[in-house]
Length: 74
Image (cartoon, rainbow, N blue to C red; front, side, top):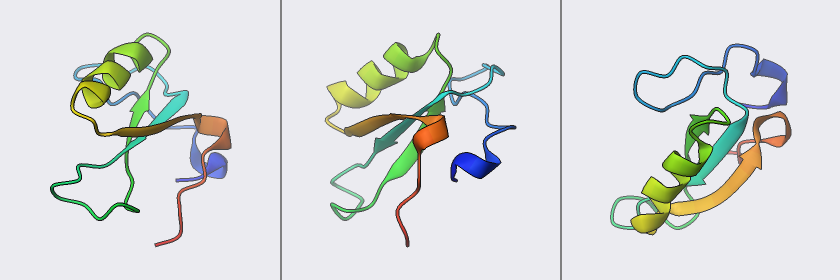
């Protein structure tokens, strides 16, 4: 995902249908190589909740405004 195709991005929180404005980049070190980044999208109301969920597990690597996100090349 990049900034040019964000118009239909919705929050990853369960049951939320609000537009996403944040990208939470994460990885599970037990499953992913260190450079791999999975992403969750967050609306303003769920950014803190989703960030906390990932941080507690040691998974959160970065939080970036969706308009500025550029996925790493595979």
